[in-house]
Length: 384
Ligand code: V47
Image (cartoon, rainbow, N blue to C red):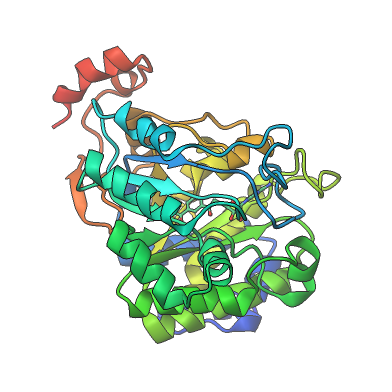
């Protein structure tokens, strides 16, 4: 497979196969791969680039699984650093932000063996009491699988009960690398690939949207990445329920693979680009600024990504693993990153309904450079 023959397929809107995908990972000309992905991205979204006002909460880091890449989990309650919030503490995180409220609360947790199922139902209900229109994007497929086993329910029962309590969609975490040769080494004691995909299948059948991820840049090969993308594309052909794909760059600090280097910028950008080209049926590709850094994520907007995630406010999982990205970005910082990439910033809700579309470049850049929150508030009304 040559880049020219792949380019021809892309121009004709033809689907890429495994050997094309592998060739893209091996192609030395990164910019050629990026340009192809950019063509597809602009065909799908033009210059529009999505972001949202969201916040991350991890209510517990107690986890019975022992994933090799995780720097966040503690095996049991009472271990140094283990923490489980009371539901009131978690609600407080949103209450404190009600002067500038997020439209989405994104919750990912450890697999806690000692909490009753009612804890999660109460958690969701409380958030909706505080802000009835907040979108609750909570619990990875791995957590849903754990709930089903632990509380002896089917996936459909777990999802239905959580939806009745306020769950709106599932985040994409927990996918890691699907291939058994890798999965058995990095996360052997949680949902396997088929189980992860089946949870998403059931969620889609129930009308819930989901995201999907891939944790790359550790012990996996490019063949494993291709296999991962192909399994997701197959599921999406079947259900169409996936909204966004998020490649997650491995962070080595403080975990069982700390001797490995983190992926390079070239690998980050290439992985975004190949994801865009292979996942032709997934509407959105996210350059997640926490995992790639805001600077590489910004470049990702020219390599196939059309989304940069959101304000986040306070991220824990990547910061435990050595991320030097900020904990959160302000609304105006996101607008600026997108604008300076020559794109149109579009504030969205979790389901990609447009909240506010900003003009491509309306303010002198030094006006949006101001980081001070008070100063930003002063500037906000100026934005058309
Ligand atoms: O499932 C954990 C990953 C995920 C490390 O759905 C690590 O919109 C790198 O899934 N290095 C949680 N990655 C985050 C996640 C996510 C993020 C942003 C948006 C969305 C979405 C989902 O983080 C975990 C795991 O795959 N992770 N440790 C690490 N050391």
